[in-house]
Picture 1 (cartoon, rainbow, N blue to C red):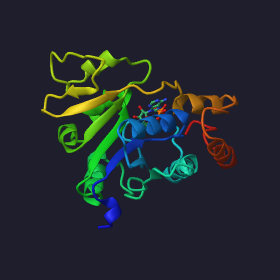
Picture 2: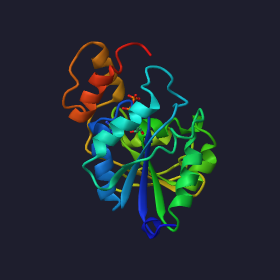
Picture 3: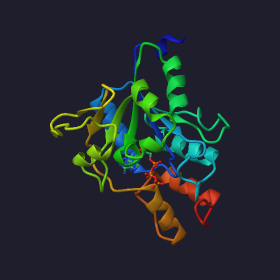
Length: 221
Ligand code: ATP
C-alpha cells in the first residue's frame, strides 16, 4: 500500500455528473475546507440506477469531470464505477473498495439532501450507513428540517441548526451541512441545451466546449 494512502481524510463525491457544474465544484471545495480533507474524489456513476434518460456516455461524463477539476490539486476523479462495466453500480461496493485502498483513513461520502432522502431506494442502505460517514449537503428547495423525512434519522431528534451531527437510528450519525447555495442543476443545464439557450457561467468553460464539440444533450436520449 502506498504510504500516501494511509491516515488520510478522504471525501468521496458520487453522482451522475451529467454534466458536472459549479454547484458540484463549489460544494466539493467547501466540504474539503470544512472537514480538512486531504482529497475529494469525484466518482461518476456508470449507469445511475434511478436515472435512465438523457444520459451522456460514462466516458464523456468522466472526461467532463476531469476537465472541470484539473486545476485543483486535491480534487481527483475515479473511474472505479464506470470501469466496473456492470450495470447498475452500487455505492456500497464503491465504498468498500475505497476503504481497502485507503487504510487507517477516514472516509466520508458526500451527497445532496435530495439524494440522501432517496437512500432507502439504494442497494443495502442499512449496511452502507454503517460503512461510511455521510456528509449531506442542504440544497434548495430542501431545508435543514427536511432531513427528518428520512426514516434513518433517529426519532425526536432535536434539529439544532448549530450542530452538523444528526443521529441515525443505527447509532451512527450524518453530518448535515450548509454550503454556499448555487441553485444549479444538471437537469436545468440539459434543458437549456435542448432549448438552444446559453449555459455560460453555470459550469467551467472547458466542459461547455466539450459538450458543444461532442454534441451532447441535444436529443431526448
Ligand atoms: P440532475 O439535475 O441530473 O439530477 P444534479 O445536478 O443533481 O443532477 P448529480 O450528478 O445528480 O447532479 O449530483 C451529484 C451530487 O451532487 C448529488 O448528491 C446532488 O445532490 C449534489 N448536487 C448537485 N447539484 C448541487 C448543487 N447545486 N449544490 C449542492 N449539491 C449539489
